[in-house]
Structures are given as C-alpha cells and as structure tokens.
Image (tube, rainbow, N blue to C red; front, side, top):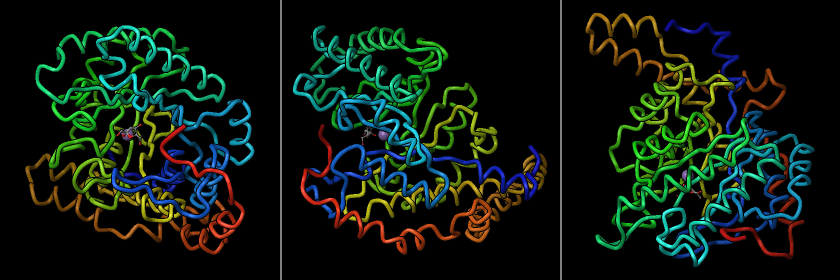
Length: 390
Ligand code: PSV
Ligand code: MN
C-alpha cells in the first residue's frame, strides 16, 4: 500500500465512527461494590441522551449499542425515534442470556433442551428489537462454560451450540449479522464454550456469510498478540466488530487506550493495512466499557479520542519507507517507520479535523464547559439509577 496524502488522512479521520455501549452510562462496579453517581440515567432514554452528548462533542459516535433486557422498553420504535431526534441511531443489540437463574449451567449449551429453547427465543426476540430499531447487528456473548472437569461433555456442548446458533441464524433478515463474541474465562473458570477466535470463527464459517467474529480486546490471556488475530480475521473477511476496552489483569473494561496505547496503535495499523477503516468495511468499532469510579460521559469522550489518536498514528505510517525497509530486510528501519508514526503527536491534527466539522477541537474542555453533567445531576432526582439489571 502507498502512504496516504494529508487530505486522505483527514477525510479518513473525519469519516471514522465509534459505537457507544448504553451500559457505560449506567452504574457499574465490581463484585465488591457498585457505586452510584449523581446524574446517572434512570432509563434507556436517559442513557441515549448521554450518549448523544458524546456524539455532539466528538462528532464521531453516532450509534449506541443496547443490552436486552438491561434496556427493556415498551416501545422500541419510540426509543429509536428518541435516538434519531438526538442525532444518534441504535447500534448492535446485545442479547443477554447470562442473568437468569435458568442459565446457571449454560444458555445455548445447557444440557436441558427447554432452557436452550428459552435462550434461543431470547435471541429471536432480540432480532425483533433489531427490526424495530433499525439495528443490523445481533451481538451474542455467552457466559456458558464449566467450572470443573467432567461437569459436562465439552464436545456435546459444542454440538448444542452449533444447533442453537443455526436456529438463530435462520431467524436473521438478509441485512442482519450475528457477531459472535469470545472470551477465554469468566464467569466459567475451567472451560468456556466460546473461549477464542478459532472457536468463534469455526461456528461462523459453519453458519454462513452473515456470521462474524467480535473481538473484545479485554478477552485474551496476558501477552496475546491481538493484532495478529485482527489481521487473520480480516484476511478471511470475518472480523465483524471490536469491543474496545483496556485491561491490566483480566476483563477490566477500562477506557480503551488507557492501559496499552501502543497495542491499540498496532491493532489500528492492521485495520489501515486491510483498508478496513472505510465506513462500509463491515467492521463495527464499538466500545464495551464500564466506568466504575470515573465520570462516565467524559470517560466515553476520552475513549473515542483515544481510538481516534491511535487511528491517526496508524494512518500516518510512511508506507513507502516501511515497505522498502521490509523488502530489503532492514529490520530496524522497518520498526523505526512504525515507531516514528506512533511517536507523532496527532492531537493538533485531530483538533483541526474536529474544527473542520464545526465542533470544538478539545471535546473534553467543551463538554466540561457545557454544564451538562451538573444539569443532569440536578434534574435526575428520584427513580432508580440504571445498572446491570433490567
Ligand atoms: C462479557 O464480558 C462482555 O464483554 C460482553 O460483551 C457483554 O455483553 C459485556 O461484556 C457486558 O459488559
Ligand atoms: Mn464485550
């Protein structure tokens, strides 16, 4: 590939969009404590209003993912209308089959066919939510797995999973996709039923073209080369989406780019190499984060900016110099070409890209000056703050 022009870099950055998770705006915590914060939304309508602020100040976050049933409402047409009025749309629908007592021993892989049928129905109901909201992505993450060797038959669980996924796949409309998310542990500790990209890809390949893998950056063992997985899934056209976040130890769900900005740059470098930044590339760049102790809207703005900064650096790689160094076996020259881009301060460039869109160059300062956080803290009194529950 050749080095993009300054105009191409700016237009790629201006066109980039990042999807926000509704649950980032609700209360969250660890198994030790969920803290409540003044001004936190009390329903999905207020979560979308907060997400719309992130879009207004970054100009780059026009979609919101929902979690069903965390975002249960009576009328999804009306929720989608509310989103449109605020300048955003509904993104991926996350079908939650991990918070019901029935699912203690699994959902789509449960040994009991009645429970499997219930879990499949929830996925089909979630596809109905997609129809009502205009969403095209059904994101499936399963908490299914085993804590003890022998607890259930590993292979039979894969067979049950394949059968259940095929039923769900048959319920998709032509424009719909399944995003099958993997995670190597938690809540199951011995074996997870979709632990890795290989398992997710195997099921997606069996299902058909409308099934793709979602890569959550926090769902890998420490030291995993995530950009390799990105490159491989892009090669076979099955990288459907990212769940971006940062981890220091486990599935920490911290702000993307906070723990390891260099890893984020390496991931975005593979995206640029595969020309997968284009809005029609089929890769949905989503955040999956929880803000337990930090201000939530501001943390989402920071996260969007972190993705933009990593992307700008990846776009600035001198591809001609890199290619030349790679072909001539100039190991340090090739590494230097990447590091030169990584070490570039891209914040002034991104401020200019934002100003060209008519928004402030510094989204955090502009959001703080807007007084929105103080306003909602005063207004949102009474009711129950949103959290990990329907
Ligand atoms: C599971 O850890 C996960 O990454 C899935 O995407 C869930 O839907 C999400 O977290 C909930 O925060
Ligand atoms: Mn996730």
